[in-house]
Image 1 (spheres, rainbow over the protein chains, first blue to last red):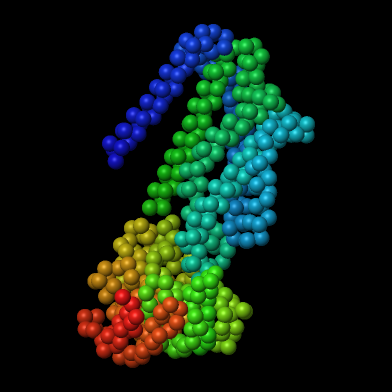
Image 2: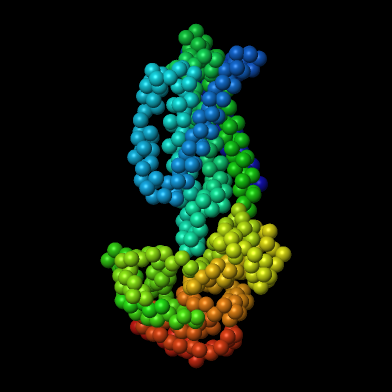
Amino acid sequence: MKGNRRKNLLFSVFAVAVLWLAWVLAYFAVGNDYLLPSFSETMRTAGGLLAERTFWNSFLNTLLRTLLSFAVSLAAGVGFALLARLFASVRAFFAPVISLLRTVPTMAFILVLLLWTSPSFAPIIVTLLVLFPAVYAMALSAFDETYSEFGPLVLSYGVSKPRQALKMYLPLGASSLLSQSGSVLSMGLKITVSGEVLSSAYRSLGWLMQNAKMNIDMPRLLALTLVTVLAGFVLEGICALAAKGARRRLS
Amino acid sequence: MILSGITKKYGETKALDGVTCEIAEGKITAVLGESGAGKSTLLSVISGLISYEGEIDGVSGAHVRRRERCAYLFQDPKLLPNLTVEENLRFVLPKERWNAIGAMLARVKLDGKEMRRPGALSGGERQRVAIARAFLFPHELLLMDEPFSSLDLALKKSLIELVQSLWEEQKNTVVFVTHDVREASLLSHRALVLKRGKIVLSLAAERPFPRDFFTSSPEEERLVRALTEGEE
């Protein structure tokens, strides 16, 4: 077990090394610092970002937008998935709605919402509209899995739906939901930043990226991207830890 | 309970093919059969979980309704891992039965383990919780779907004895599905042998409980014959 973990860690380190090597090779191949800065310069710029007040303001705004969208989509997705599990009519109602939300291009959402709402609000709605179907599908699959195991029990004993929801579906689905919500959250961060870039939401990571692009400041643009990726990893890690805690509670 | 001409089809396959029999009230009826004989389908029909053709007590399968007062004992104990033993019982029981939980847990030798989660119990203890749940639930009919099939011999013996003694106290109507001839002869007043969806033998075994686990009964041979006749 411990040996396997060490081996997996080694593979992860190897993957990072491969990515770094690809960057170095690309840097030498391109040979133009304006188009592709060196890795070390990007890291230096990233370090410099951490000392900027504007960066922290922007980062927190972006994080807040992501978390807000995630929280609302989690509450709505889990709530409606629960209703869909308990009532076939709700499931039938949401099937086409979810398909529609999944297939509409994210850019279309952003462009329409930019006309309807403010630049700082549009990324929140866009992220919510993208995350909601993902959370709904994730929660419904977790609840369906619980039903396949305990459905005969609650059916034959006639357990009330509120009791099923509170004592069975929500607690048993929590661990699976938490372990998958890490990837949803980091996807949310990605969508929020995309929305901010397009809407030029003031004081946001997207806004900083847009400014860096306009000033052809590639090290800054890549440093901001790197910070976003790292923030996504941290969010995923927090969710993984929470899922581990939930699983430990169940065992 | 009288079942007349019960037929259940899954596509073109007949899981039950015109089953007609009587489930005696206040007795244990075993339904024996190999895998795919239609045993579990028969339980689902009786509990009203699935539709069927034919009639039960004169009510057509077209008007099937889930039985309100029907307890179920599954092969797997089906205990929620997030709830303690006591909470698992409360989960299915109506509030007025909650005060009987302590006594029942003592009866199934689980006193002191009320606050444990299923993960902290042995396989036998988990099945005891399931038995306690089934007998505590206010039911007119108890359905048991191979509850002992995955247990080792010693555990099987102790749980069969437990069910025998709990039944002696309640004298409820039980339909018990199994593929084990010994289980059927130990724990039933009548055994029905189901083969390819049809009842091929109905055999009474009115000896009193407790029955000796280690001595084979006279009806076992006939049950084995009925089960294996025509098979390679």
